[in-house]
Image 1 (cartoon, one colour):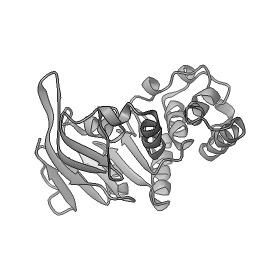
Image 2 (image 1 turned 180 degrees about the vertical axis):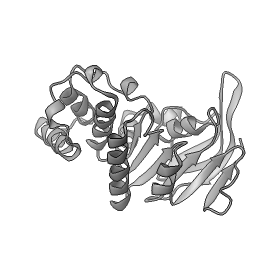
Image 3 (image 1 turned 135 degrees about the vertical axis):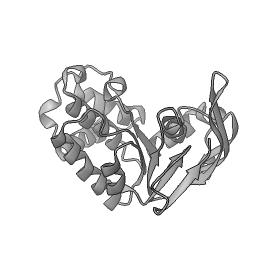
Image 4 (image 1 turned 180 degrees about the horizontal axis):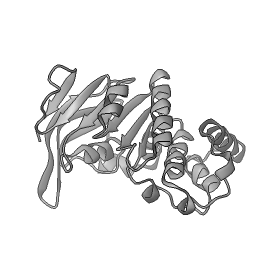
Length: 228
């Protein structure tokens, strides 16, 4: 993931200004900064949900912008390679059942139904949510919804995972499970980009930190400092 003089503003209010940095394949990066500093916007840009208004963003050497994302083959390619787990899992889930939710992405990729069924079964077993397959996502607990949201991304088997405040609102048991799962992804060589205020999570997974705006007390850690 490469950002070159990347700029983005909401309704004329600059959110990210002249951002230059690169995340290499297999890096585990934690984004830190105040609310409104641009962490979530940067994650959305990585997944092709917002686009540079000046400068550029490249994934695997290919520019990601409004024009390229209008090409179905390119959009499919990017969404197969980069997964995004929203802070609010409820906003990410919209199907009538957990099984349909997890199958949605692979079906959008036009995989055969046998392959879709295999992927749904595999991720449900891996995450321990087989018993939820027939449930409606909106009736699940926060921790269960988080697992389903992760399962939806995991069913695509992307190279890079983008998490926005993944521990937000979770109970202790689910927090511990998620920390372990992130360690597994890191151990498997996946690229992780995690926006968080949680220092225990940051210390657990970060190869280095990216700080937005002012930062204090972490100067001795490997880091990149982005001025907004």
